[in-house]
Image (tube, rainbow, N blue to C red; front, side):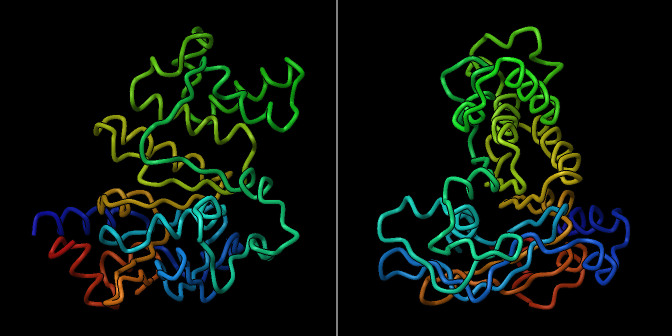
Length: 281
């Protein structure tokens, strides 16, 4: 009961959101239509239809194993790297089909960046971590790289911490700083969408708060989709929430999608109510 009250208090403390106004103001950046995701014959995600608004944070929640991360990775075609994976249905980015045969997958992964569950800096200097992506895209002039590195570290709220030690190893930073370094690395290739797969699960509460504040700052420039098991976090940071569950055939399905305030205070599905209030999951 205390958990439920804390979540609802968090959501009610946020400004009231008028859904019609929100949708009118924000264009759809990405969408899925009747999307099913397969690993060979096994259907991991079934018939998801979802619209992701530009310059907003969309949270994907649900019990472990219901396909949240699988869905997230499909948005930048990371699942292509898994042998036997394929989809049915459509995924769109700015109205263009993401799985069209003419699509440049490398460009997709530049436009749709990814931050993983555990910080994974390269065993390189802080500078080289951030400059890695731009160099892959043929940015070689030192002045351009310097500008991108500083811009990205500032955007990730890390510049003041590291500006005097850019040549030190990124592995020497604290866990929270490493995660912000990974965010800076993703931002350095100037994506449009940032996917975040439980980005705070390995962090302490102070570092978690910094990442959440950073997400709020970044959404003015980027579209953010986050997978999280932390209900308080979803309530605090997201504008929209998608609730997923596992069907009897073990395929994940989206059972509800709405503005976050409605999901956490007046959900349409009893299973959503039970999950967000901690009755199961």
